[in-house]
Length: 106
Image (cartoon, rainbow, N blue to C red; front, side):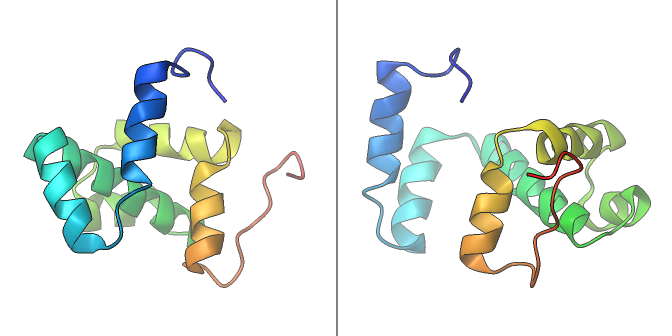
């Protein structure tokens, strides 16, 4: 975990998010907390991560999501060297039938 983001305020935000019970509640909360562009950016990064895990190329991802190659590269770096948050969620949602191991065996 990145110690820079571990604050009481972030803990409170995450506690609030964990109280949400369904997509409708998520919409209500995130529409108040985020700008439309922030929310669309978050959802775009998630789609990029999903497509990378599915083995799609940068070109395919850029065409489908509208993400820049810089965004795709940043998400790819998170998938390969991040905190495994994407893969944890993918496995829980069973987005991919198999979530590939990282190069370092994690």
